Figure 1: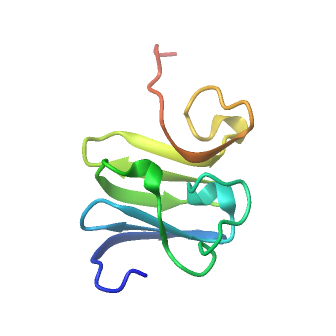
Figure 2: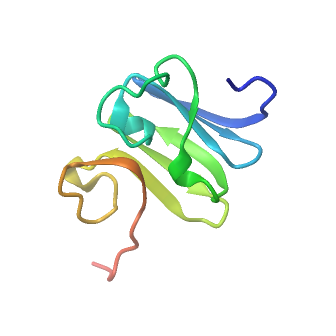
Length: 115
């Protein structure tokens, strides 16, 4: 439950919702496992109806979230960007993602050279 927790940002897609707290934590809930960043490709127990903290981001301070149709993004206070969900067409920007899914947040990789 988020009772008593100050929410400073929310993003909603057709399958999932992300919320960032004043303490930089990110909570997820909804119906699409990989988009939630909770480490599962399927339904996550409790996450469909109740917000679940994304533990993979513990120790990091999030300032913004974006929930997309097939992938989601989290921006940190230090400017780093994390992505999770479907990596189809390189949408996540995390480099090699053999399974096609990143079920937990992964750092977006900077380009090595300009094209």
